Amino acid sequence: MTIKGKVWKYGDDVNTDVIFPGKYTYTITDPNEMAQHALEDLDPKFAQKVKKDDVIIAGENFGCGSSREQAATCLKYAGVGAVIAKSFSRIFFRNAINQALPAIECREAVDNITSWEVVSINFEKGEISCNKGVFGFSPLPEEILGIFNDGGLIPHVKKILKIKD
Amino acid sequence: MGKTFTEKILALKSGKKSVIAGEIVTVSPDIVLSHDNTAAISKKFKQMGVKKVKHPEKIVISLDHCVPAATEKYAANHKEIREFVQEQKIENFYDINTGVCHQILPEKGHVLPGTLILGADSHTTTYGAFGAFSTGIGRSEVASIWATDEIWLKVPETIKINIEGTITSGVYPKDIILHIIGNLGADGVLYKAVEFGGKVVREMSISGRMTLCNMAVEMGAKNGYMQPDEKTIEWLSSRTNKKYRVIKSDSDAKFEKIINYDISRLDPQIACPHTVDNVKPVSEVIGTKIDQVLIGTCTNGRIEDLKIASEILKGKRISNKVRLLIFPASMEIYAEAMELGIFQELVKSGAVIMNPGCGPCLGAHEGILAPGEVCLSTANRNFKGRMGCKEAEVYLASPATVAASSLYGEITDVRRNLK
Image (cartoon, rainbow over all chains, first blue to last red; front, top):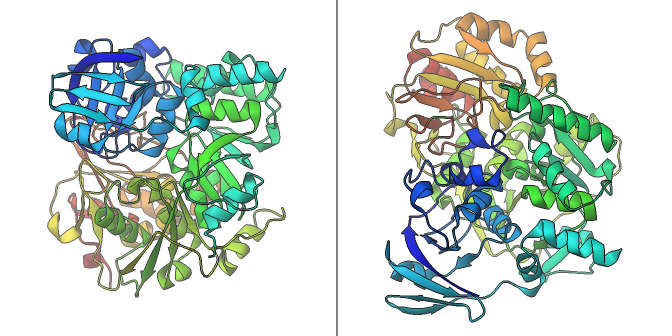
């Protein structure tokens, strides 16, 4: 699978409160409504202007803070095709896999990609192509890839339990 | 080569003889925690087509994030949780009159050394203070554990943090952990297990140890751990008669790094807006005007925190420019504070005593800030918008610094109020 999208670039330590504010955590349950508040306290224009397969580029520790899964869900439903960061906070990274939102660690890509350029990501080859060249990334470990390929943890478990039955 | 606590416990819980850092293992947790997010989790659980949770006895649910319900939506959320609890016959359910999950789990005897606890809350790291392995996971993961009793975890490397020296007057465990987070940064120990040790930790109360492990996640740690000692065992003996086995790092365990701190000359510390690692000694922010102060939550809402605050405020009146909110971490602490006369003192000083719970910490209710306002809080996060308003600012400090500052309506060096 290859996606192509415009880049929204942010800095280090983008936390879950600015990705999806805590005040909505128990009041918004529809993922499409969550998407309308994506990155609300970081970049108020984002939710209205983001297009399908757009790519978020960020620095270190993306998604730090709360365990709230909506931080990954709101980006997924906003149409984000992938988040490429220098590093991810561990719970966000898990939540992203469990929501089948590609979370890619690639320092070189982050350093070389600028805001608003269009990049393409080839998931099979593990390659990000941008204006400054092509950068490789490692695929998910096999044990975890299955969750991602099944469309997230809930469909994955559903599938596994049926197999067991 | 010896093994760390984290390697040993993840081997035990995955049924392997030994594991090494970097390995992915499938474990079966001893306890799975969720709170007000249980309604959302139960929906995910039902989406999987599973009727019954596999191990109701492993599930602990506590309502704390917005209690009592602030709006009809929150109320409906709580109602759904109570119905799910009944339907699934979950016995370890703590309703709105109990307190914050991270205080309740140890108080009610659910936390034991050598156990593996996962929770749909990032501050689940708190239980490392009792020698447990505990960390936060997402909502889908809790639903999946309810159904399958298992989850994958990657074995992290361990960083040892030794805290040595002598704690001086006006400095508290909160100052120590803020200093460490400020020094290492929000991603300073990203994905690593942290083992806290050293003289200061050994001498520290259980309450202070909980504050340290609670905030370990603010520097990116997967879990925090402290080796259980006589204090831990004594504390637990009054909470549970369940048997447990203490697991410790081997004396020749391989740590990725050992970091030593000497806190003998540490000043009171303040985390400034809008990140927890933006930490400065109090001298650099003295005089910052504050509108609201908060003492409590899972970080600093224990009886010794409230005692410290009431001792500083005794016989004095807070500034009329400040609102002081007290959030005890549990109803047990609330009752004890009443018995000890702590609440009387605090109320005389001008405090508002709130019910046990998370309060405004995550921006849900009970003390949301207005644009332009500043709050000095004992909680664990100060991200933009955290207390419900993105044009407000949150500073973090110890209960002592917060109490002293409430007297002047500005950030103050607590040592000015101590003899």
